[in-house]
Image 1 (tube, rainbow, N blue to C red):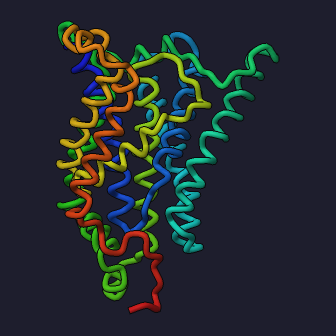
Image 2 (image 1 turned 180 degrees about the vertical axis):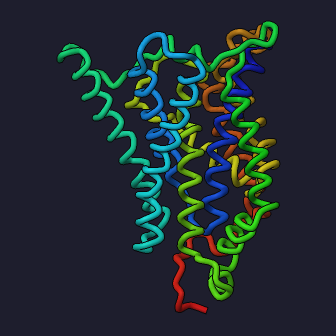
Length: 314
């Protein structure tokens, strides 16, 4: 049961951060289907940083550098979506899908080149090991081994709630996602606000990516991408109605089912049910389909999401 709690909190932290990223983007009026790809880019940047840091680096410095690089790489990758959708008014769903496809391919090529260079041509894999640096993110409370990533996710959740509802920036961001023409008419720079929303989603998506690959494992195959975690975060965002606290609660629910697929073999009563392991692996996605089928009709997305902003429209 301890292991189930541990994994639930880890996966919930990932889903909270990535879903909050999607929330900021969509609250500004830009649909971010590319969260999966942004996670891959952020994971790649953070993992390469862990590998490149010299042995003996202070744990605190490892945590700070890995988080900064992951967030920065996520922000840079999100600019691809921002430029395509905001400046060139590209179809936001197609642009996000293209970013997802680009990310896994790019990460595979770059990690293979990285490994080939480091091994003098003996290692051509897209796999990175970061066993020792990963330990910097872990701490224990009794028998429960936790990650600083969980604490970071909680802090970002609190900050996001305050920013969205208690600041001028949050008010302007929400206005741009609901009535961009009205927001523009009172002097709000809609383009800048939409860029801000997408870039924030990039930073949070990048952080979610490194948490996903580093919080529970010391090795990652980058040709696998992030195994659909970005799309699961989109489901969490929709189920959470684009509101931070509801997103956190939804993330805990989805995180529980995602954790079950990892630890069910260690829970006696689940083993006794003799259910095929594939069913547990499918659970998070089955639950997301069921939840969205019953809640999507009542969902109220920002009115202007997915609609390119045109100053001339009224």
